[in-house]
Length: 127
Image (cartoon, rainbow, N blue to C red; front, side, top):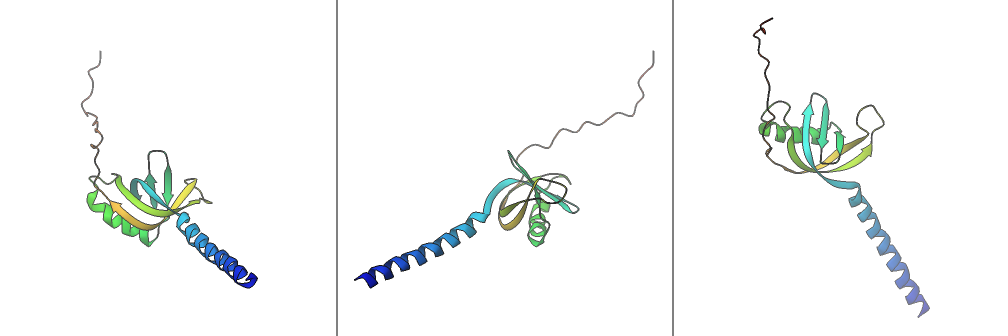
């Protein structure tokens, strides 16, 4: 009887440890909703209360290819939903960076473009 009870307890411990490992690997990736832009070799995802630099890799390039057709202007940010790993940045730039692991969705920008003010080239009359 004692051996079977010990076997059950050991089995429960082993199975519970396996579940903890899979949950911790899921906890590393975070769902991130924000606006994305990639210019030259610098990428940014900006949300309501955060700004992350983006690790430039194959996933960032793939996201950029999906975003490009939706941009109305060169510097237009496009809403995206991605899963990624948020890390502290050891280099110059943003305090935190995100390594994109999965592209969940890309949508068209909904806001109006900012109003552009052009300066006139006509000289002002002097007094």
